[in-house]
Length: 285
Image 1 (cartoon, helix red, strand yellow):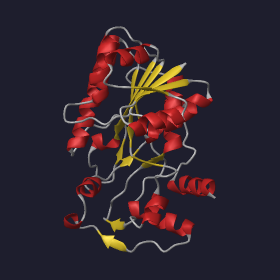
Image 2 (cartoon, rainbow, N blue to C red; image 1 turned 180 degrees about the vertical axis):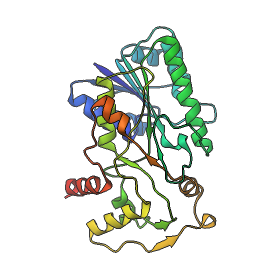
Image 3 (cartoon, one colour; image 1 turned 180 degrees about the horizontal axis):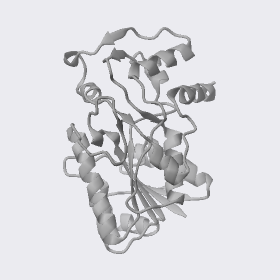
Image 4 (cartoon, rainbow, N blue to C red; image 1 turned 45 degrees about the horizontal axis):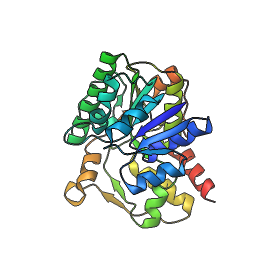
């Protein structure tokens, strides 16, 4: 069995490690030297996404495809690159598209499910909605199993509150009522693998942990685990934060994961940030 990664980044590599442990081979679209080296470290084959012939061969030989590349102003790059080969007859048994919970927009801290109406507020969110729609329409037209995963903030080894604290980049910006969800990268990989085992065409899943919370709580807890003083709390001021931070604080919602649990038999190994951070620190030590 073979999985093809379009966008072999942090999340895709976690899934690749999980699938290679199950005996799968890995290939991925890799234009940069860093991407090629990352695939080589996984024992994977690097495919130049600008080489249509190589891309055709790789896709034709794949049993599963994961798309994690973000859309650009022209739409989803994976859809542009892979659709011709899929239309020509490539038929992987599973195509997973990694989207974002940003498609729900701001809900004032209320819960959202996969059935909640989409109301993206940012250009990035609107692009994700368009990419989701493009992949879903292609799957329906060609009879392919396309599954969409809506993700919150992803954290894990090398990408957590510990790293921000050590770099001196952590902040505790407080905006009353602000909550967000998150997912440990290994829990995400486990959900993707469960979906590969139980494919359903057109499925959409929220993949997140069980406890949405204010962002400053995570920093406070991580500092306590490291035995360092947390940064001081600062009231949110939109005039004093970066554009990405303004987009983050413009949306507050609690994301429900019950559907993934019910249909995939998935449960997060790290149901809250506390278990996730503890595991990261234990592995480091």
